[in-house]
Image (cartoon, rainbow, N blue to C red; front, top):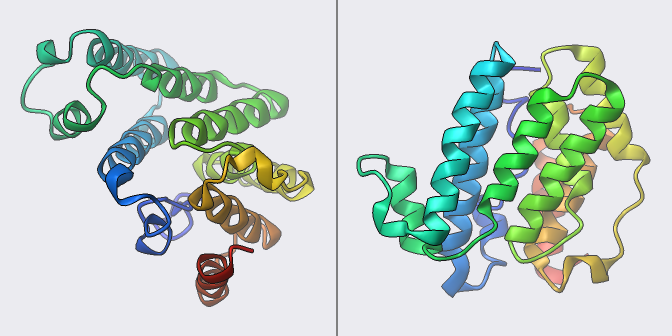
Amino acid sequence: MTSETETTYPDIRDPRVMVAVPRERRAAIAALWALAERLTKLLQDAREPLIGQIKLAWWRDMMTMLASDPGALPQGEPLLAELQATWAGQGGLDTLVDAAEAMLLAEDAAARRDAAGGFGDALFALSGGGGGARWGLVWGAMLQDGEQEGRQLFADARNRSAPPRVSFGGNRASVMLDRWAAAIARHDGERRWRGEGLLLLRLGLIGR
């Protein structure tokens, strides 16, 4: 489950979803999801948990600094500059790093399920919505090197009930991402690009 096609998880920066984000929030949300992408890449590349933890600790420190003293952030890292422009003085981004670390350290199916769902919940909450656990399970499945581990997380996503719409806090983009993830899980991670596109079109037009 490591090819580029298979690891393309539902992303709010997809233009079909980003159009549902209020215009004044798009730059901040794009930066947030760029951070999620960077953390995901870190998890994919981590061969030794200790090295991964060291890298995550750096990002945690940067997110703490972003909230408390954004002017002290180091220069030369484009993602930090993007976050500084849109999230300076705001807390909470360190929770996403914590969720990524939980995924890094998960050693069994139950821990992977909880960590993946937790990452989705944290990311959706920071995006202004809720109900991110099912998306998180699909995200986690796409991270797995082992086929069995990935299939188990896809199964967990399939077996998880759809969140009530109220849990999304009126955030249509979150609804779209959840339903998109559910469609991927329904086919055990096999992508049906045309069907996914039609689903997003319908959700964008009528919201369900």
